[in-house]
Length: 336
Image (cartoon, rainbow, N blue to C red):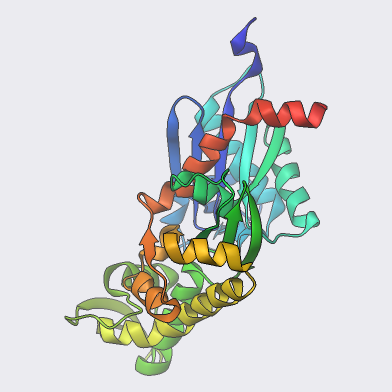
């Protein structure tokens, strides 16, 4: 029995902001921003990942640095396919046998969106493509045993979507997916700075503000950060000091949208599972949950203990990696 004849098994967390790749037996081998720089005239891919991210907002007319995924789904099919091909080649090298690939998707995507992900991965060189819902992968990655008949609630806040699910016996009982997450936080910061200070800032500056001084719950000590943008009155560059109390004003609205969504999922949860959740608490995963005070806000509004999982950013990828171990079981089921 030749084991190597089957090629590699690869798990991909195809995120709006970051692509994380897990290879069976090796762990996480790649973590790159989901950004691609393309030459408009020739259609040639010039840079992918970290290199392309540096080009965002800084390219000449013929080069476009784009994010091919928006709100958790593929918005530019061709570029997504090229990006996947680049990452798969980088991880697997020139493979003799095409790898089997498992990809994460938001919990409420349409059949058309699912097909787009499968087609893009197949065109990029996958032998077989499996899909797994993000909250389920996040729960597995957070170390929760989802096979038991008891309720676990996971709130996975990524770059494009927030996925909320109550999981029992290995599947979602109640779930919802909303297009409010890390990117939306950045948008609200850009709007706030423009409205309050008449200064235009870019996405990357907004993200720096969110990471360094962003908060959605009042801080004991007000922190500040200097940023540069374009003054909309004079049209000249201007430096501005922003405080964390201002970030609270900017971010509270999208944060409350997430809290309301959690509330609506809890309202639809069967009473037995609700009791389990109030005992165990709510698990938060994904890079978006690292915004300061989001766990405190959710805990205050729901009255349920909220825990942030270890290595939140990699939770979904790690869960996908663990799910790869059961691929042979899945293959058996599909054959039967």
